[in-house]
Amino acid sequence: MQTECRLPETCFEAIQVDDPGRDNVCPFFCRTSNFIYLLVSQNLKLSVMKKLLVLIGFAVFVTSCNNGNSPAMNNGSDSVAAACAAKDSVLDKNKATALASVQAFSSGKLDDAFKDVTPDAVDYGDGGMAPIKGRDTIISMVKGFLSAFPDYKGENFMVVGDGNHVAVFGDYSGTFKKPLMGIKPTGKSFKYRDVDLFTFNDAGKITEHRSVQSGKTMMDMVGAKMPK
Image (cartoon, rainbow, N blue to C red; front, side):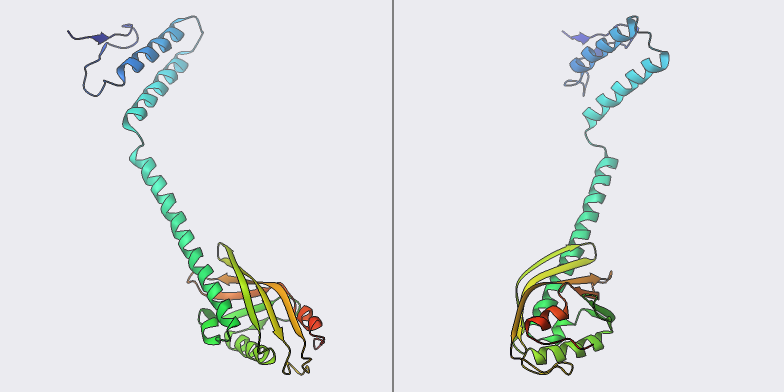
């Protein structure tokens, strides 16, 4: 015997329980529709537009429950997830590049340290001196520094990044054994915590470098004075 789930004729026509695709929906649909009908039929002073909005909203709700997430919603979510994954991938690559550069610098391997630096890169240091412009000029300055501090090293590195900026934290030390920019060596050592700040372009190359510790801090530790 066929069982029907009926609503008042003034609201909806009868919906059959055994109608294909309605097995799980009809009882809930009927009860809720009856409830809406009672609300509308009672003296609630709802306007015709409000009644229609209630019924339309309910129909949309039932349809979305039956159909699950729409393709448009899924496509939107997939697009956002893909964009986030791509952004994370670029940042991870930049972080790896920055760390490799610092590690190579600490080991005195300048070719490796500067292989991902653009020719027109700028080193601002801590901002206390004029910026050094151009990769070749930066390399020349670095060679002079490493010659003066032959045991220079960095360790305990930690890398963080955001967007096209990467920061590499590390502990650095060295002994002033040879002249540097006309300053006589003192044979004393320095040791401090510093941060190298790198800026990358869209191609994943380093365009700018900054540091936190100043050259003066290092020179004070080794008992020397910075040239004016």
